[in-house]
Length: 263
Length: 320
Image 1 (cartoon, rainbow over the protein chains, first blue to last red):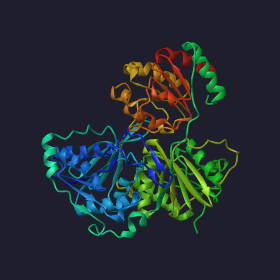
Image 2: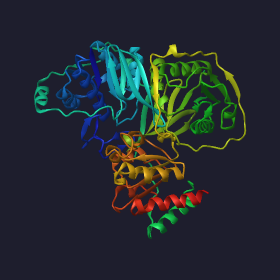
Image 3: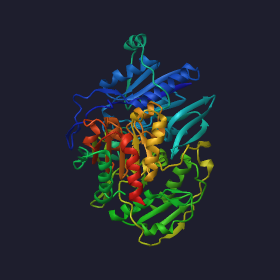
Image 4: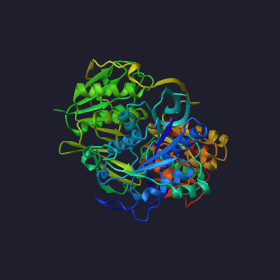
């Protein structure tokens, strides 16, 4: 079985985000980029399934420009067998459904029998693409998975179901899973892997290679548009209380009750 | 011609969650047409009229466990029957799982986890945090209907005005066969507390609780004293002092309570990402330079082991 892993390049999780302007959006200069942390769990799970000989190959799919190649090579260095970068001017301005259409088409072309992706990308925080890919392909989905077991064509996937409880969801492959933190501990690339990855070819595919109608992706197909970018709303300045612990606690509770009115 | 707002009203075995009331009231206030409450898996809901629903539609079936396919079919059936211009749902685990699938099925747009909604010339526009809350952006959805999930506690929860709405059972039949998966087991949590993402009060502990016993004896009782849900920083969880389900932050849960008490938490960017929209933030930390103090409404430079028991006592007294 071939596993497809969806990978996105995002600004590092500890980045300071500056807004260039309401229509310009985020100032991308000076941003250090990384593989979306949740996609790392997805990749690691795929590699573990390959180690266990449940999967034969792990293929990485990523929608992005040439600058995102380094992330793809990182995934190859960790053990992915191949990758396809998806890039086309027609993809510009895609909403989640557009991205899902691109990834689904690419994965389908490679004949994968399972797709793993992070539960959300830490830049747009949409949490939509994996479920959309599943719908497009007509496959079952389990999102926000923190444990996965595969046996033959069957799977069991654990996910949080609210209030700390976890559901154990079962079904048959092919299927799409989105990964949550805690699923595994992503491995680092070893030097040998890094050297090998440097030499791997990463083909680039566009809309016509994937048989995609340009009207179904990109800004042309987008039903969701973002505008009016800004900083988070300013919090009113807070204050530090004074006195010994007992005095501060008494003052705090009075403030919570009478000023903040949250008691 | 689509118009009005369909609000998916979540419930626990027939008892409506606060988010249902919150969204109905907001939908009414937006003034873009009639408000229809959708109740999936229960046959009541007349009381939703007291919170803003002009009418209630129900879909029968066993939805006690979340099955993506069943939820999608139910909402799809409701959309076909009601023809709303907008669908609102709380950004619960179920809605975040199933609504994107529905959006793909019907070619719709979905705005994720908005914290504001407004009426712009008759169209509903959302505003939401992105980049883990480090930026905000307007979201416009051009499909009909437009779908939005809403972060819990974004709007006030109103009192009922005592009103009542007509309830209509929709002829949409949904069964286990509509799902491609099944839930074979549910592992219950060790203690039952309100879901962190929906909690209105949270008390979180940092790694300086020093041990699981430290967390259990300091954070849990303090939380319990005000009916709060216990949370934890990533460092605290990674050290094994609190379960992963309690983690608040960029790789944990995003929360939006009225009151967030951070005990011994420094306030790293990734933790802030999970709780910075909390209305009132209280920080207790021995380090006066801890970044959390820049975001706290009230800061106490003190030892949380000293403050904790005193605070529990004072809170219990204030609430009695």
